[in-house]
Image (tube, rainbow, N blue to C red; front, side, top):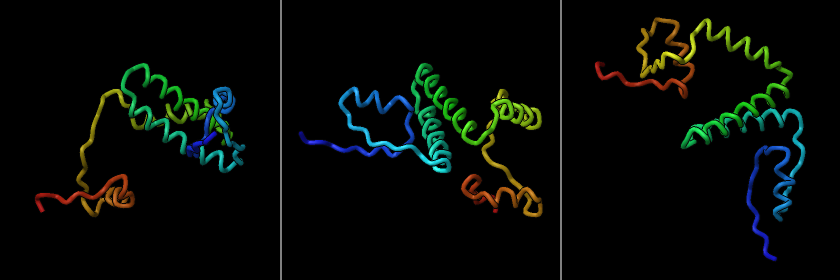
Length: 136
């Protein structure tokens, strides 16, 4: 028997190892330590968010969004954050900044260099890269 090894290197759902074993797969797993678990959940959140972006229909999107919510529940529990607290923070932020119902898309902003907001954007170059202005 020639075994082929595939790298998985990620957090997986609890019942997956036994499911794979029932299909003849040899699973090499371990229990993540507390701090590592939190970091793995954060990576898993990004993975599930990307899969939501890649979803091709409503059914697949619903499944991937369900996975995102499952990871959020696990991450909140791991950090002893009550879901009611998360919801209260969400609602307060929505009250302060609004939601996404109006579908507002911002292409770019122009900020006077003396405006304190310029420092905010400049301090986050990956999120807000500087654009050369054509009128300069």
